Structure formats: structure tokens, C-alpha cells
Amino acid sequence: MRFNQNQIAIALDSIIFNTDSYKLSHFEQYPDNTENVWDYISSRGGQYEKTTFFGLQMFIKQYLLGTVVTREAIEIAALFAKEHGEPFYREGWEYILEKHNGKLPIKIRAVREGSHIPYKNVLVSLEVTDRRCWWVSSYLEPAILRGVWYPTAVATRSRYIKDIIRRYLLNTSDDLSGLDFKLHDFGSRGVSSKESNGIGSSAHMVNFKGSDSILGILHAMKFYPEKDGCSPVIGYSIPASEHSTMTILGAEGELGQMRRMLTKFGGKYALIACVSDGYDIYEACHKWGSLKDEIIASGSTVVVRPDSGDPVDVTVKCFQILEKYFGHTVNSKGFKVLNNVRVIYGDGINELTINSILLKMEWCRYSADNIAFGMGGELLQTSNRDTNKWAMKCSAAQIDGDWRDVFKDPITDKGKASFKGRMSLFRSRLTGEYKTLRIDQEPIDSEWVDQMVDVFENGELLVEYSMQEVRDWADSYQ
Image (tube, rainbow, N blue to C red; front, side, top):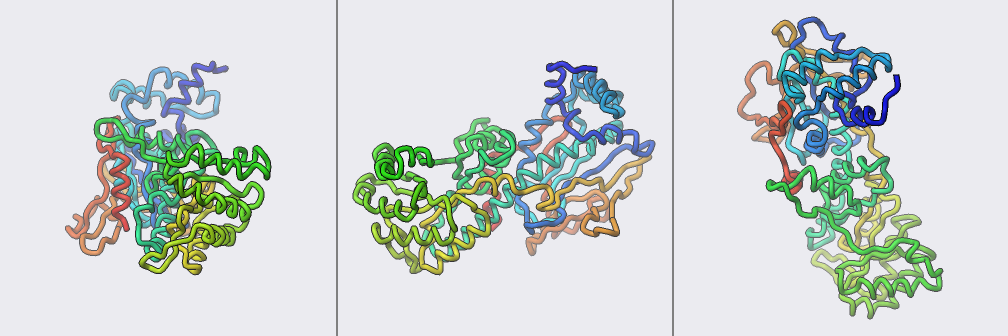
């Protein structure tokens, strides 16, 4: 059997194919008279003790809204499964097509996007709304788990870095207003695909407003618009050089290229960034010093970018050289703020190097106002599903009208033990503590407030957040 390009294109766009091969046989594996299967998604532990939830709305809009099961896709899937070596539940998919007009009979509940939740709690739950479609919720596992863990992982890492920078600003700065621009997304070229760029970079936008990833900005604008369906630009950048533009005339032409940056962009933009380690970063700082009068006259602030060497030592030495030319003011907390120039460091940046740079700056009495950071592959590409041990598991099933617990508890790894029953995430009115509690047993005490809401049911999005609402909610978790 050979498949033409049109058939392959239909398959790639179909939710039927957006799964793992072994899922095709699972409809035969459930007990007779199974009527419902209840699944949940959680972080079972890992590197970060809290996760910043994001991306479910993006996934739902991209893959689940409206009619997603078509006759063409069913026919192709039946042929593909036979050739692939798997059974295919044609009857089940045709039932969804005919009974539900191709809309998935699924109910999804989730915490609010932007929530910063301790790990080892339920964040998303799925159950079917038609007893004849009991197999659908678990069938979606590969797609929806991927749609949740990756953007949440990026948003979480970005959030933890924001907390580090906030701490140093509180210690050394009079002004927190620049916090949202302290970590710039440099990751577009370092990710695995265009889609990864859009998803991961939009997740960074939950916490910061600076980005060079245009695709991430557009993803956030598309999937998290304002109530009227439109969206403002939610990420910002500035004119910046690269090594090719700074070294094109050789070392002897570097000063001229610096001056060209001032001529072309000075006065038109508040900030101009210039990579300056093409040859000798320290000599470049002296060259910027020689342009002091021109920089001041332009009215723009020049952001000098070292891009090699030891980040801690290089950063502080650049400050020391630039300070000799431009001077500084001392803020109310006793820390120096350079005049007319700043530094951005964007090579080898992660939580450790950011903390180390800021710590050394604090020791040397330089305010965190003086620096911003660029982060690429470390931001978007180094997390994986095991970074926070993401999993989607079945915890309850309805068979012959009765709900029963479903769980795993391997003796070789208690960290993989799963929840039992149907659950939701609750928060104490008194202490702010979060707990995952069963909703299928005794009533929940009034102290505990349910943090999960219905977000999707039978092909429709029930709750829609704008990017600003997600940001505001994320900022409420201090």
C-alpha cells in the first residue's frame, strides 16, 4: 500500500494520527463494559519545586476545537494501521464523526494559566462525556502531555530566573520597573523546529517582555488574544548588531562600525545594543569610552554586549572600564548605576551564571540596573519531560456503572506512584497551601477552594485567557 502526498497531509493534520502507535490497540485492552476513563496530568517532582502552568489553551486551539475527526482521516487511518501492524477502532471513530459531528466528546479541566503551583499536584484532568467513547481521553495522552509539559517547562525556568533577578534588584536597585526586560529570548535559532520556537518562546512571554523570537511573540498574540480577538504586540526588541556587521571592516574598522551604530540609530531609539567582543572586548570598551560625547549627544543608551569568556569576570571588568569614561550615580541603596551605558550578557547564560554575575556585581557595588541577559538554547531547549517528571496517568475508570480507582505503585520507584480516584487541585483560604484532593468521596471542607475550572468540552473552548491576563495572574504569585 502506497500513500500519496494528499493522504499524508491529511494524516499529519488529524488528531487520529497525533498519538503513539501502541494507543491504537488500547480500545481492545479495556475491560468489557468500560464506560469512562479519567486521566490527569501532573509534575511528579524534579528540578523545580513549583511549575508555572502554560500552553493548554494554545494546544486546544491548535488541535481540538470544532470538528477534528473527518471521513477522509478515518479511511486513511484504517489503511495506515493495517500496514503499520496495529488494529484500528473504525467503529469508535465513525461514532464520533456521526454522533458528535467529528467533535471530541471530552471534558478538560485545568488550573488557570500562569499559575505557579507546587509539583506533585494535579494540573489538568480529562474525562469523556459519552460512555461509548471511554477510550478517547487516554488516546490523547501523547499530544496533550506534549502540549502542556514543554511550554510549562519553559515558563517555569523563565519564572525561576525572574525570581533571581528580582531578588538582586530588590537588594541593589531603586526601581523594579525594568524587571520585565531583564531576560531577553535569544533562542530562535537554537530550537528544534519552527513550532518549538513558537511554543517555547511564547511561554517565556509569560514572565518577560523582551524577545528576539518573532515567532514566539506571534504565537502568544494568536493563541492568547484580547477579548475582541485582536492583540497588541506583546514582545519588544531594539536595534542590535551581530559579529558580521561589527567585524566586516576588520579590527581597524571596528570603531567606525561603532560610530555607524550611533549615527543610524542614536536618538531614534532609547537603547542600542552592540556586540563588542569581535577582537578584544576590553579594548572595545575603551573605544566606546572614546565615543562618550557622541553617545551623550545622541540621547541613546548604548548596551555593550560581551559574548565570550568567563561571564562573571568579563562582565565586571567591562563595568570597571566603562565606569572610568562614563561615571556613575549612587542610588539610595548605595549601589552604582553607570551613566549612558549598560551591558547585556548573552553567551552561556543560565540560572547559575545569572546568579553568579549578579552576586559578583553586588559584591562590587554595581546595581543590577546595569545589566540584562540574553538566553537561547538554555531557555528553550535544555528542558525535557523528565526535568520535572511530567506524566499523564489514568486514576479512575467507570465499569458497569461503578467508578473504581486506577493507579500504579511500583516497588522499585515510589516516585512513580500515581494518584487514585477523581481529583482536583485546592488551595487553603487560610494558609495558601495547595493540595490535590479527591472529589469523588467526602465533601471538601469550605477552607479549600477549587483551583481547576472547565476549559474544554465537546469541541468548544469554555474559558479563554488573554496574554495580559496570564501575565497578571503569574505576577500575582510573588
